[in-house]
Image 1: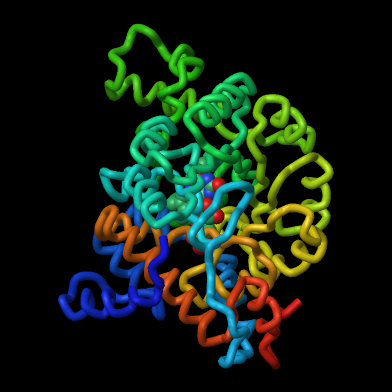
Image 2: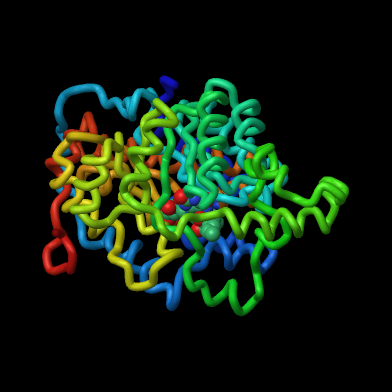
Length: 397
Ligand SMILES: Cc1cc2nc3c(=O)[nH]c(=O)nc-3n(C[C@H](O)[C@H](O)[C@H](O)COP(=O)(O)O)c2cc1C
Ligand SMILES: CCCCCCC(=O)C(=O)O
């Protein structure tokens, strides 16, 4: 991908003139509000909502206000490049798609559309283990895309091993183990609406394609029938998510796969240290977009200390609250090696399928590039000298 991303601005402007999609970013609320019109109420609150009173969702956003860029517009005198390598995956920019389960509920093309777009743009995507399509279907739909596989380690270890082996066989290039969501957080909106897509057999594409999983379902029911899906949902609840996960899991996983293993859901520097001691190849600083633990530290506030602790030994990735290219620039400036975009790509998918995802990603990349050019940053490394705590604001650790 050699295009200058910020040429996208003209195209987006033209789209805006045609009234096709709202321009993004600038006002993330516009994208979220528009997506609301495309999604059934229960699904919209499941996606947009957070744990408890939503304080961590808000804190994730507010944390960005504690930082500012001090531009040096005459710059480094070098051509800007966003191309980077993350754990052996060469990418056009240090921005990737965060794992988001159940994308098939937002649009029938689901994760396959998102993966295809990521591949076309030269970006990486971490596929959720709660995807609507199976990991094989997504890999098949996006040959050549830089795909990673995200795993919530199942209670059934054999099943977990089987899924990891399948991911490696299908060409996924890393395993991202999420440790902050073995079960869902206290999400009042979902509770009030009685919304649980898994009960209806959704988000099980990868599980339903695993013989170890299907062998445990009643064999006297028609495959795909409502009773069969209900049985699958019940079985999924038994096996999904390991409440007793221990650090030695990472060593065990290293015996099963030779892919790089990342840990997602870390906000404490000591946990990052322990993860490195257990052999992980990368750390994702994240609080799951505020969906799991209300009053958890804002992810961006946790980033600098983790970066300091890791001190370049493994890549540090970041998500939670990123809505714009300028947000990406701040996270990179605080030491993230790459940034995962979460809800916004799902909103794009809900609004306009693959085109919506493409639109969202290109806008974020265009704004990131403009931000760097105007800051005088030729590389992500340059950004690290230009981001500083905003005077008088909280945060800025
Ligand atoms: C609807 C939805 C489903 C998600 N599913 C997963 C998942 O299956 N696995 C996972 O590790 N994270 C999952 N996440 C969390 C994202 O990977 C990411 O951490 C989060 O969206 C970042 O917050 P943000 O969207 O506010 O930027 C999900 C998030 C949303 C909104
Ligand atoms: C039992 C936890 C399932 C969570 C899968 C989707 C997800 O991560 C979310 O945030 O929702």
